[in-house]
Structure formats: C-alpha cells, structure tokens
Amino acid sequence: MYDAGVLLAIDGNDRRMWVIHHLALEEGRRLLVPAVVVAQAWRDGRRQVQLARFLQSCEVLPVGMDTAKAAGVLCGKASTRDVVDATVVTVALAYGAIVFTRDPDDIVHLGAAAEIKPGLVVRRV
Image (tube, rainbow, N blue to C red; front, side, top):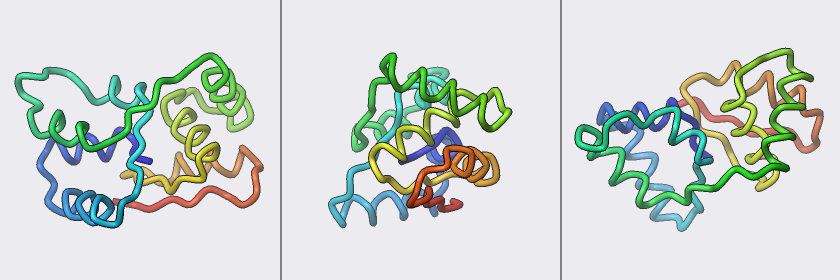
C-alpha cells in the first residue's frame, strides 16, 4: 500500500523508491493505492509522466461508502482530520497490507487508534 508521499517521491524521480517498487513487482506483490491518494498527488498529467507510468503498475482501489465511513470513524478515534491517511490505514488493515510512506508518524498513530490486531506494518521510504 502506497501513500501520497510515495507518489510524490516517484513524481520527483526518487531512485530509491523506484528500486523498492521494481523489487515488489519482481516478487509478484500487489501494489495498492487508494484512489484518494492519487487525488492528493495528481496535479498535471502533462508533467507527471513518471507518476502516470508508475500508477499503471499499481492497483488503484476505489473508495466506497463503507471505507469512507470507516476512515471517518478512524479520524475521530485518532483525533485527526487527515482522511486520506485514515483511508490508507483503513484499506491497508482490510487487505493486510504493508504501508510504504514518507510520514510514518501519522500512519502509525492512525494504525494504533484502529486497535486492530495484528497491528499495522509501516515502512518509511
């Protein structure tokens, strides 16, 4: 599971993130990105060619009503307003996914507030 920080790193042609991504592809992993994360990072398709190419190798997940409500509840539990991060955590927990992020503190805080065992696995990129 990728958050917006990962997409921004790719958009900036961060070589380390490209390596992580290619290794995951070679291992046959599902690379998940909630659609709201794309919305947070996408600004201009004419300039974001790298990001567009990257997203073609990811599974972009729609965010339906149940997920949106669960993310809102999680924001309440964590006393935060970042619905995009809350959506990342909600979807990651539902899929048992590892979250790759540039801002692990917020993701870890939301994961702890979810009070789901086993807990969320987070990797800083």
